[in-house]
Amino acid sequence: MSVGYVYDPIYLKHDTGQHVEVAARLEAIIAYLEKTGLKEQLTLIKPRPATVDEIALVHTREYIKEIEETAQKGGGWLDPDTVMSAGSYEAALYAAGGLIRAVEAVMGGKISSAFTLVRPPGHHATSGQAKGFCLFNNIAIAAKYALAEYNLERILIIDFDVHHGNGTQDTFYDDPRVMYISAHQYPFYPGSGDIGETGGGAAEGSNINIPLPAGCGDSEYLKVFEQIIVPASRRFSPRLILVSAGYDNHWADPLAMMEVSTSGFGQMTGTIKGLADELCGGRLALTLEGGYNLDALAASVKATFDVLIGNSFEDPLGQSPRRAGTVDIDHLIGAVKELHKLP
Ligand SMILES: [Zn+2]
Image (cartoon, rainbow, N blue to C red; front, side):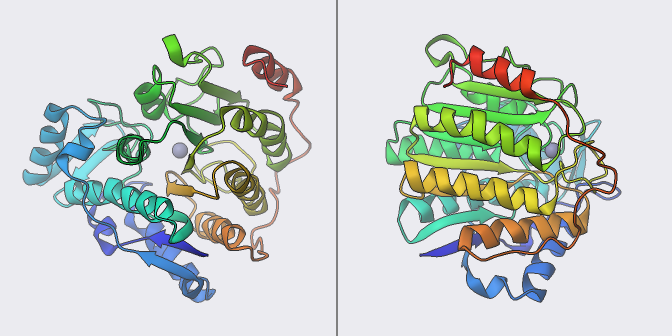
């Protein structure tokens, strides 16, 4: 079965001016997929705008109105990091709708897995607040949509962006149907993501934070996947896996202090694909969050697609020139396993 991707030039209309989260990110990815011939191996899924009712599965009507009105006024800053232009509301509707279309394609069985190449990103946006370059929480909206539309009992969200997805955690903190697992640099922006944030009420245990120290690379992430994410996913037994795919933990990224290589992202994707194949008939949809070094982003997104397709892949950037040795995270892994009673 083919691997799908969601893309549309409408995502370039979210104009952030002088910023790290820019339209050139998507242009670099698409150009690289074209240059390497990979795009021809993928099936294009056309996005649609999410409806206001769909956005309201996660966000308040007042907040949605505020975003619409800010666009109508030509844009403006919503928080110290997050800016809008006239085209941002429409782009944001299509970003959420793009992931909904990916979920529909995967659930319909026409596509084995899909990756939505969208912006603005989403995982920092909360019900009533834009944050960290994010307007609407694309992955939370798509998960709520999938719960309602397909009556799924359990959805797993894996978030490997270097930042904690505070908005996604908030949305499902008390919802036992959605397990949220995040590995992120900590302490770091946005401040949430402590190991002790484990879910509320009946959802106790369905929120797993793996707060990593700076300096972690491929081997540490591999350990986190093997020792925490894989056993936790098996125990949860999801019907669908969604992924907040952020590439700002690449060693070349300007925002964070991690040392992951393009090969490391390929390995992570392989593990996630293996979980989807084993647990939920391969049903897997990824969405782009961060990643701000254009070369590293394009190569890592291509590696992700290559692994989804089953191709071998190249790592044109190689390993971090700074990395001197591994970071000891055994104590952290032990603490997370004990807290969540993982085997
Ligand atoms: Zn990020």
